[in-house]
Length: 105
Image (tube, rainbow, N blue to C red; front, side, top):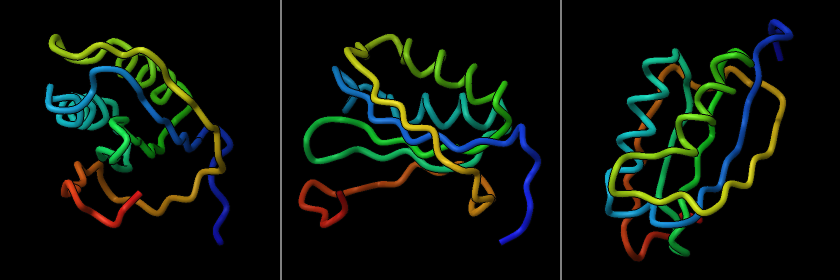
């Protein structure tokens, strides 16, 4: 594993509330791309949205702030935020499409 700059971080976020079927994943992807953040966002079967994001600490902090607001039709009731070690595994930020009966969790 390579050495990464200390200001690069990874965050794993679970967002609850009215966050599915309201454009939340695409809003999240737009904000991530605008801030130069890589990773992914996807819906979970339990109604939450999962986000894994990597970037500078400053960009990630701004991203979390933006995600906590969400798009107009959403309502964020809670966010579980877990800080992790930066891995550098992503080349861009993707919206992962998960089906209703997906085996992904």
